[in-house]
Image (tube, rainbow, N blue to C red; front, top):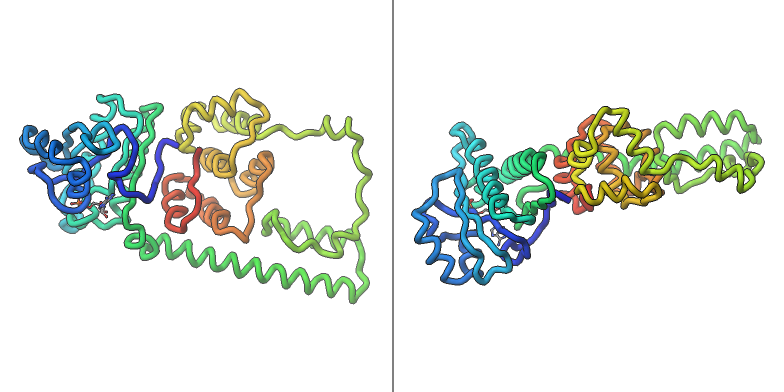
Length: 355
Ligand code: ADP
């Protein structure tokens, strides 16, 4: 997955380069800077002394010494002064300059801390947004690089933010709906039995109406539905002829219909090129659920088509799963920004979209 949000200690990450949130002297400090120097040993400071400092928004590179990474890219983030002093531009420039150095040194894997979000005071949710937006824009032109955004102290930035509290109430509402649905189904079963209305049109009408609003994973099949006579079963031959298009076929068809290129689609889905090639060349490839949803998001499919696409890969969306409800939340609002969705999934401890 080209961008991954992870919770980790950056000094432990086995990547080609980690990025240090340094200060202009490059002579070490507290926070992540201190942790990196401690883990790398004194030779890192020796090399830093020779660099002559670094301006805010720029980046310089050293070796990684005792760290498990090959390089440390040192960048200096802006101090937050309320947002009206070019902080965002400077922070963007930190990510861009660091990534340009990473490309120059042929790094395929790079890990960033949330620059400026510690003692420099940049609000963590905004710092994360700048990180994700800038890195994802940069990766549009670069293939085969994975960038980790490392969150150290998750609790401090999550649920307080408005987006996350909206999502939280949305989840709570859906859970309530699910509960309500189950009892209303029971009520309808009771009514049907009481009135003796075992009548197919009636039942089908109710079922169709409900299908618009309900997930596939309805855990409560109604007695009424069970009593509907089954259609004549298909012969094996007929069934094979009626096999639907596969996930891969549907994906490629939708990419064409949308007038997208393959690369536009897999980049928007936060999927790497190799995985996409596998799916493209194997008609029967069965992706993971997060990959399948990532493509539905990249294609900006509405909810019903998202469900179709998931079904091709053997999955459904359910109101009993927080993950699924969060996906629905974004699709219903027409927000197909996979990175924003991943931030929300991360905040709620769910798997992220992508490979
Ligand atoms: P700045 O001066 O740029 O604000 P800080 O080091 O104070 O830099 O904090 C930057 C971010 O790095 C903060 O979000 C902090 O929680 C995080 N951080 C601190 N230590 C680590 C670590 N070992 N690994 C990853 N992130 C860390």
